[in-house]
Length: 102
Image 1 (cartoon, rainbow, N blue to C red):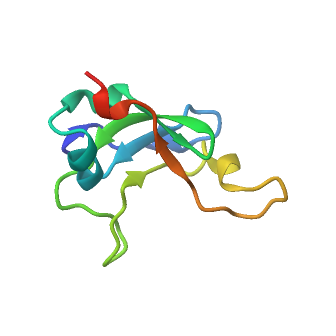
Image 2: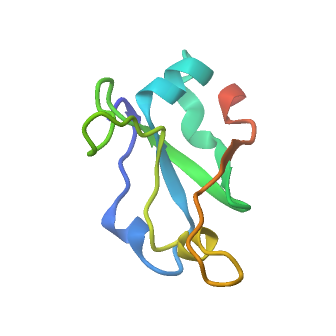
């Protein structure tokens, strides 16, 4: 981890408030050198998500050749990933002031 903490097992349980870890590249492009980004929030498909950390520089995720900008536990956000008809949807992530957190 570059800043803050990783997603913990307790974050990935039903009923827990949703949290996220930013990828280093996204944090560097939007927030650096603001270290207190963990005080901010993102909106993912209409759900407020608290930023708890920033991934280590060089860690881009688990899929070779792909860069992950935001890491999320799946259980607390599961309803946000489905349409009203029950079909899976791509998450849309919107920043809500986290780049100016102090």
